[in-house]
View (tube, rainbow, N blue to C red):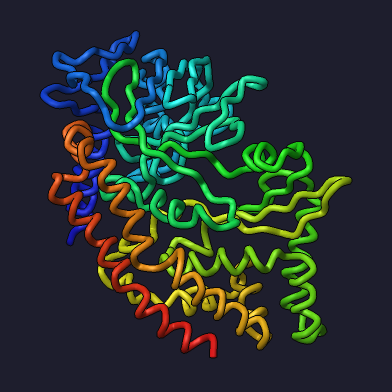
Length: 443
């Protein structure tokens, strides 16, 4: 293939993605952005008819320019696609320069939220921004809602400083609930999971489809959940220290360094882990990540925290999040995925280093194996997981047709059912392969 042909093909893809991101398709109409001197958001000729929804409804009101204007709109590609020295033709489409990649305070916009369900009523001014990493490039985006201080609503049984109206991450255009399914299966454990509920969003009174309402399990969430000040929480993510004190984070990195240092024997290294890490929670964390075949981990989506104050000096605890690569996301062969090999194959990964060292202790191996088998008979039993999956599926069945009409993803109700059924088949058959892996690695 000639270089000119390659460039031509890339240019066609560039223009196609530009059109998809700049035009918002609705039932029989298109919202079109005007590129005049003063950009405006044109209302469509035909709106979706408002209907009685089974799911709770969230209403967001924003200044249209804040989301859709060419210069400052954070929901579109906008002018930033041309204001970057990098050549987008040499990048993956999700990394192309765009307004929606704006981060930090510059990306926040004022808005009004209205949401009511049962005894929960939220009607207040907020700040919103686009949330996520690569998934920002999808036509439907995740929106982070930040509440003002002293005005935190109570959701999921405690005050929250923010919520995420999530597009389902990498699972967008598929089941719309892979991450939610994983977390709802884990909800009876002691892990700091992301509570979920599916909602319908209306943006400036226009139907905006199904979203996953959840919270970000960051230092703000942990402070509210455990009733500690934010300054007492140190949070580390894949990229490094996210919140808290560097000297406390260094304690974690010191542990990792000791586990790789040959001057200590295996018994000493096990004691180091026992002193610093909540092994009980670490085991649960590992069991579910392994079972779900989450291949976007542990090299990515790492989150570990510690609470330290005058009253408490906790051990390090790992938090599962962004698990949309789980179940059958990678295809029908995912059910066979040997996640023990996947984790242990990483050389300089925090999770891998700790897990490898623990598996050198015979007593630990026995405990971990028994714990894994207990979960296979309870929370990870086929019947329990299918109950959760079928419950979510039933909740979305009456809404999915409107969502598909709005976003054209998935392509049809039939395709959506195929994606859901793929996860169902995964659950029906995963235990068989997990028991093979347990016998291989834990004997």
